[in-house]
Image (cartoon, rainbow over all chains, first blue to last red; front, side, top):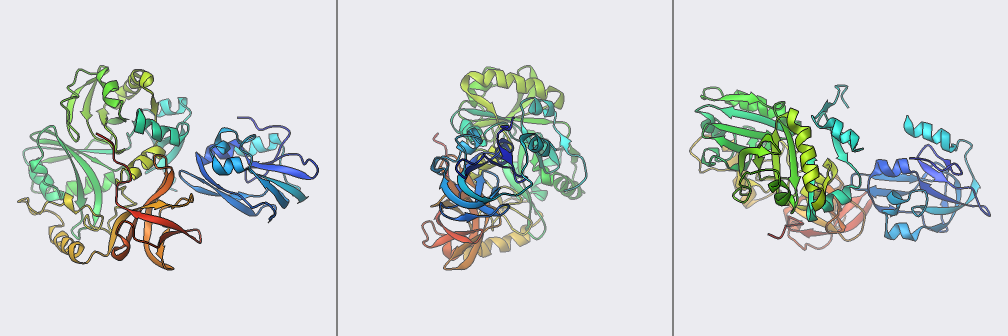
Length: 125
Length: 372
C-alpha cells in the first residue's frame, strides 16, 4: 500500500491534506482502514464544532471493533463527508479519496506530523 | 497475551499467500479475514465459503464401553445416536456449569469423535479422561490427527459433488460418513456453524492443502471464496448459535442458556451434573433469572460483548455477542436480560453504548433462518 506523498500523517493513523484557504481535509490511512476491517458506522464531528489535535472527535465502528477518531490538528470543522455517513464502506474502498472524513479550518497544527515516508516506517513497525 | 508461540494450522502457508489478516484465536494463528468480512459473510449466505477450522479440538473415544462412558460424561443421550449420525451436546460440571458445547459423531458402533472448541479442548480431554475411569473405553487426543475444512453455503453440495462419489444426497443434516474428496480420505460431515447448508471435512493435515486447492478450483465458478473467523462469528450470530465464552460459560447451566433441550434426563445412565441440572431445570421453569434474547438496533451503533442492556435507566441485562449484521443491515446482539424484559417487542429496552442509551428491539432468536 502506498501513502500519498502530498499528505501528512498522525501517529494515530489519520492523514491531513495541505490546507487550501486555511481549510484541510482529514481521513484515516489505508493501513488503519485495513486494520479496522469493514467500517459500518462513522460518527463524525458536526460542522461548526471545534476539534483539538490529538483528541477524539468521533468514532469508527467495524465488524469486530470500535475505534476512536482523533483529530490530527486543532480548528473548526467546516464540512463532513456525508457520502461516508451514508456509505461507510468508502473508508475501506477509497481511504485517501472518496473516503475522506471531515474538513477543518486549521488554527493550530502539532509539530510532530509525519511525512509519507516517516508514516510508512511507523505503520510497518 | 501469553508468550507461548501461536500454533499454525496445516494451511498456514495458504492463508499467507492469500494475504489473510491473521489473529490469535485460542492460541492459534488463524485467518480473521482475507478481504472484506462482509463480502465473505454474504458469499456464504448466497453462494459458498471455504473455511480452515483446524483449531477445533478432536477427541476420539473407542472401545466397547464408549457409549456408556459418553452417556455418563455428557448430558446428551449419546448411546441413542446411530452410527453415521452426529449430535450437538454439552459437557457439564458436577454443579451443572457448562464446560463446553460439543458435536459428537458416532463413527462406528464402538467409536465416537468429539469436536470441542479450541479454547476448551484440553479441559474436555482432561474431563473425559478422568470420567473414563471404570469404563471399557479409551479417550484419545486426536487434535493433531486432523485438519478441518468447511464448505458452507447453498452452493456447497454442488461444489462437493464434483469432487466425491460419496452419497451427499443421502447425507442428512447432522450426519457424517467416511469417504474420499478430491482423492483425499475424509470424514464428510453435514454440519456447520453458519446457519447454511454445508459440510465439514476432517482430513489428515498432510492432505489439507491439496483439498483446499481442489475445493477452491471446484468452487470458483459458483462463487466460492475463502472465509475467515470474522464472518464465521457474524454468520453464527445471525443464526442464533451460542459461542462458548460469550453465551456459554461455567457460570451457566444449559437451562440458563435456553438450551435445556440438550439435557436428557430420560437416559438410564447417571451422568455428571444430573442432580444440579434437575434443580436448574425447575428453576428455569418457575423463576428464570435471565433469558437469552435477540436485540436489533434501531440506530447504527454496534453493541459489543459486555455492554449493559438498560430499561428506564436501570441495568436489566448484558450483551454477550454483538455485531453489524450483513444480512439485516443493522446491528444485532444476543444478550441475557431479566425475564420481565425478555418478551419480543418489550418496549423501552436499550443498550448502553459507551454512555449513550441506544434503543433496541427485543426479538426472538434466531435473527436469520435459511429457506429450505
